[in-house]
Amino acid sequence: MPRLPLLTLLLGVSTLAAADTVPATIIVHADKPGFAIPSDFTGLSTEKKLMARDCFSADNKDLIALCRTLGPGVFRIGANNVDSTFFKREGVPPLESMQDNKYVTDPRTIGPKSVDAFFDFARAAGWKIIYGVNLGANDPAMGPTKPTTPGRSARRKSSPSRSATNPTSIPRARSAKASVPAAGATRSTRRSSPRPTTPSRPRTPRFRSPDRR
Image (tube, rainbow, N blue to C red; front, side, top):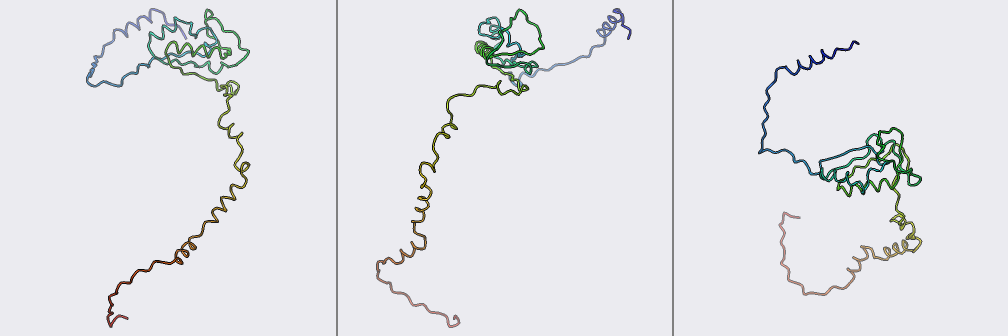
């Protein structure tokens, strides 16, 4: 494909600039405000491999001052490099220097020190965090550490069962139900008990119609 001369390109740009303008009208309704922008609407996002460098920490006063100047916001870390950033608790390589700040494509490994330093930075800046996690690695060892204190399930396993502490608890409950008298026996007992005699009232004789049988 032949290249266009620079002069032809400049002429085309000047022609577009000299085109007829279309008038436009903008009306601002001060009495009908829209939705208010929240105070923490500001956000920044960066690649997660940046955590492998000495960037995010409470000692980075310049970056903390920049975030505070912008106001409260949300810091998202992850992006495309989250799938090639791995986590290890031990044997983590030392942090790289920010002086050699270049985009890398090979994987990086971070450890607890990098994660703690990043959250210390966010606390000092007063920003919230959206933290990306590498789920594509499918490695449970990269997950959080479970607490070692015994939970409710451990207490349930250590406590003896009901049948072991009192094997006869269920039969006793059945025998207690059997000892309760039945409804018919209760009625018969009430009927057999003597009733107090009261003087009878005179009854008015009733007459029947001869047609009624």
